[in-house]
Image (cartoon, rainbow, N blue to C red; front, side, top):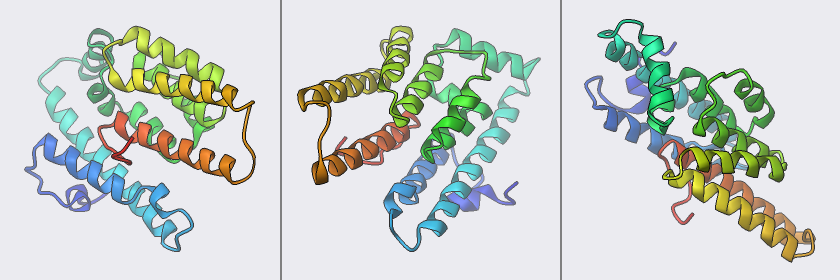
Length: 214
C-alpha cells in the first residue's frame, strides 16, 4: 500500500473525482511504456507507471468504500449496478478485478488478462471488450471480432466498442487486400502502427488518450 497516493498523482486529498481522474490520465500518458521503447529510462518509467496505477486504485478504493458505506451490502450493490446500468466504463473503473485486468492489457500481458477474465461471472459489454483487446493483441482476430460484436450488441451507444470493431474489420479488410500480408519495412511499420493503435484504444477505454490523432 502506498503511504500517500495523492502525492504520487500530484494532487491534494480534497481533490474531486474528476481531478483525480485527470491527474491519473495525464501521468499514465506521460509514463506509458510505449513512450519509452528502446529508451534507457524504460525501467524507471515502467516503475513509475505501475506506481501511478496503484495510487489511482488505492484512492478510488478508499472513496468507493466511503460511497458505499451508506448502503447495506456494499459489494452486492456494486454488482447490481453493473447488471442494471449497462456495464459503463466508470463502474468498471470502480471494480478491482477489472482495474487489474486493465493494467495487464496496458502492459500487454494478454494471456494473463484472458485467464483473469475467464474467472469473472458477470460478463457484460466491458468484459467482451477486454476479451476483444486481448485476443487482438495475441493475433486471434476472428475471436476478437466475435467479442467486439457482442460488446457492440450489448451497448450499441458506446463509441469505444464501435470504433474498436470497425478498426478490427478495417484491419482484416486491408490484410486481405494486400494479399495476406506485407514484407520488409512496410510490415514492421504496419505492426508498429497496429500496436500503437491498440495501446491508444486501451487508454481511451479508461478516459485517456495516448495518441490524440487516433
